[in-house]
Image (cartoon, rainbow, N blue to C red; front, top):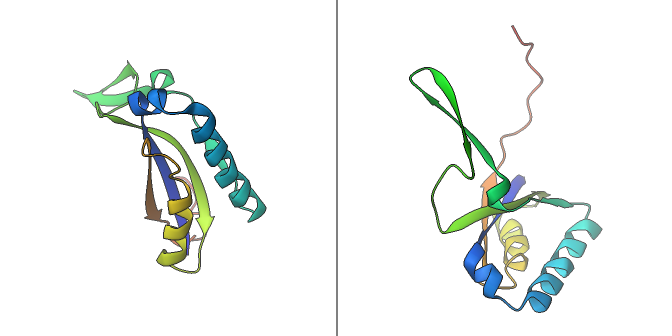
Length: 117
């Protein structure tokens, strides 16, 4: 089963964390995933985001993340796991510090591409 492992973080808690310890543990997690053939991607800070909303039939482009929340989307991994328990085990490795919050979302099975009309 394939899962998307989403990593969220609280930017204030992240800034207050022991950076050397936090990023050392996170680097070890990334290395373990890479050795398992499942590398991920890291995102720029939420301040670099652009959100596009549709209002009154027109696109509205906004700076920053869509939702005003305490946690921001930080990155993601696509992982292959035997089952949810194995996916949870990977997710637990992503939280070396309370500033990081993982979430798992199962991916739909791949289907053949459909032509664009």
